[in-house]
Length: 285
Image (cartoon, rainbow, N blue to C red):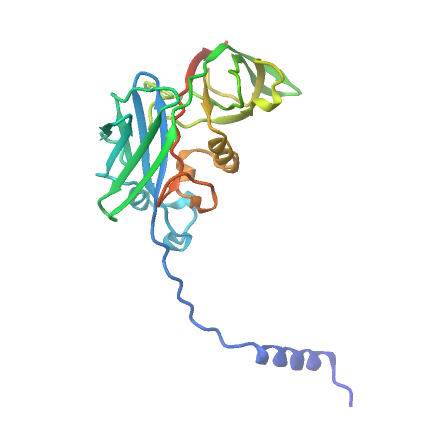
């Protein structure tokens, strides 16, 4: 006797589902949070360290666009003890008012080719992180200019710049910042505003000459001004940034676990770098 197709389908489905094992409860151990470090060196003896905590993607249960303010505050490391040591001297950084998780020193001299050691203690978790990096020589722009243009109905700005590449192998980070439309004082070196709209990474192996120049095109630039900065960075930091190139800015980085990225932080994550930028302001026509 032949089975009708519908009955045959029910029989096959019954056999299939009957072979499936019953669901078992699974318990996933929570990952212990680690301190995540980022840093900035500003000419005139200023060093800025930002400390946050890593977290499990299962911990919050929602995407980064809907993270609560309370949860974001939990990620920032407050009341930490942060020090920078160099040539037998130790400077203790102070926390910035109204900027949780950000620590600064305004009296740390910047000596080229000197080793600087960061140490940070989180009183909430009892964890300590450290890292040592060599201060890289300052490299500044020789010239910077920007002009507006349009092509095939698309508006853009062309930022042209040049600088002198010192001898040896070097790596650079060029950042492009827009000034906020609000009537507020903007400082691209301020730790709470240091959010690059675009970042360009350069490796001098491709230069071919010590006098390097380039033009970087940015479409749909609405701001009436542009800030451009260049930093001489280490090869390891260059590789770190290259892997994070899809991250939009500090705040999107803050809510992503950086466990897959390289790090120079002992017992922690992120990167301690001792680069200090040259920043130029351009008012567009």
